[in-house]
Amino acid sequence: MKEFKHRCELSLLVCEPNPLRPDRVTVGFVLRDTSTESPRVEVRTTTDLRAIRCIYPEADLETIQGTLLDLEPILKNVTDFERHLQNLPADCPADFQVLPGIALLTNSIDNELELLEKQYLAATATTRTETSKSAHGRTFILRQMQEAFRHFGISQFLEREIALDEFTFEGDPLQIDFGYLNRAKDSYRMFHAVSLVTELDRAKILALSWPFIREGMAKRGKQCELWAITENESSLSAADRAHTTRQWMQEVGVNVQPVSAMMGIAQEARAELNL
Image (cartoon, rainbow, N blue to C red; front, side):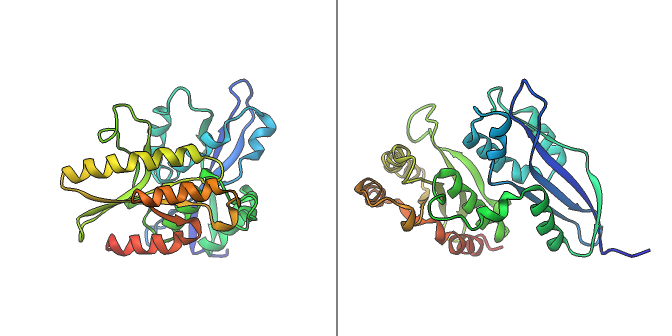
């Protein structure tokens, strides 16, 4: 009998978007190497949810995608994931479930991941080579940020959905996507996905809020930075609105960077985290 280097367990993450129908769409998977010598857990989720619209045309894809982004780090721990599912808000736009795992033998985890992505998340291959026409929007930017952080192995060391209403007003829904403390410089750096194509109003809210946040943290002796990650220049309209909004953010002290810079940003973050 042929011997394999890795004995794995494959679990599929499925989404049930329509409460009135039992139809399910595979939106991700978890591959666990059960070897005691080299334990490894890999999580992949789709970046294209259009298949959900086939069974539920009214589905809120952006909110579902945001929920997926939150689930990825939790999926690495089944216990935490099950607890997280139980605590999802009642108005969550879809039900998620991890199907029972199946055994999988392979000699290469990386090669197997590529095959599994093609088999279960076929859209992933196309989204990685998206054209400039589709490479925009907050969800797209968030995905690119997350992939860069995951590439450099720092996702689990970042804070997420950072509430700052203590510096603005009670109940402020604004939450910054990612952040970490640079202990060497004693400063806190935050990153937020900002679309200059589809959500200019949110960009303006961020620009208006930042001076209050920075001043409030300074009063507590905390130095902080805010980096807004936006679409690449090629995705922006020639109209002045996007460029004016970007300039406005820069004038109030927000460091505005294109999403194409994320790999370098994530690499720098890894160095500052001393990983």
